[in-house]
Length: 264
Image 1 (spheres, rainbow, N blue to C red):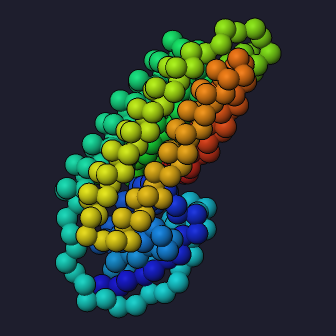
Image 2: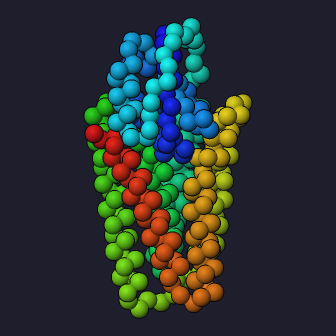
């Protein structure tokens, strides 16, 4: 058994971690992956050479670089059953809030909520693809990733067009109270996801810190939508809601391109 350590400079959220896991899933020589998110390092336990592993990591364009390779006597790795159950729970929470935020966003005429719902959907895609690909073929994984990526980009582009239409047209003000209340519940949902992720790694302090990094982007987005709701009421303008919607749609498209990398 060999142990190869990689530095992944852009690995700072759950999407990057899961993308790496999905990308390496089809390589049979890999026995285990050990992520150290705070230090941006990935340790791969494997047999044979590292060429295929290194190539796959570089293809993700996450700043991957091999640091070292050495022999290892470790053969006993923890099972992933409990972790998969927790990932299903996080997936369910994210998808539920995608539906809630999309529905309330349309009803309240808030592009911020609609955009945030797509961010929740993006997280659902990442976890879902990872779980569905387990035990499946590499071709199946790539097809699912391609479908999810293009679907996500299509929704985000539709969102951008709607933002432009509302920016130059005369629209009723979005319901600021709905924006704030739903975003607060989304913030709580992300807190629950954080707790679940921490629970799965409660004995490893480094991973506890990693879980904080995992949800930081989603929490910032939730806070941004809440602030936009407050500004909508304060300024009697829909512009703050449209601005935050535009920003989040951009983040959604960025995430979609990361998912599409898996289909190459």
